[in-house]
Amino acid sequence: MKYSYRTRSTDCPYELAMGLVSKRWKARVLDVLSRGTLRYGDLKDALAGVSDKVLSAALDELTRDGLISRTAFAEIPPRVEYALTPQGEGLLAALEPLRQWAERENGR
Image 1 (cartoon, rainbow, N blue to C red):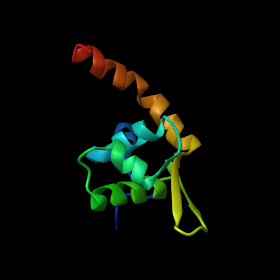
Image 2: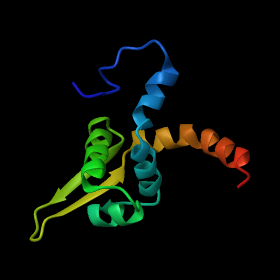
Image 3: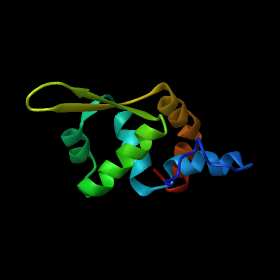
Image 4: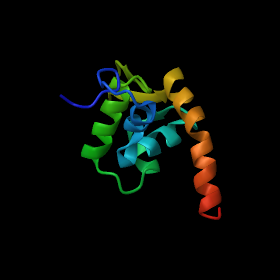
């Protein structure tokens, strides 16, 4: 069974929270989507270096965990858009102090 914070049994809230974004591209996907809704191709372009396989897996996990939404439109050609959910926005707000700390520590 793949990791899901909803089925994970842990008594450590840090482990629970970090498990949501622990894979390399998941935090970056959330960061890019914090700027607005994007189609798959635009999201891939914004994440230079990510493979289709890895991006698809990250999007599937983030969608399954309720952090992003996936909206498929019945059009030809097919169109799919990804956006942050309220849970995803809340997670980014919670991670904001961590981002600020990292920037301070790295002299940005």
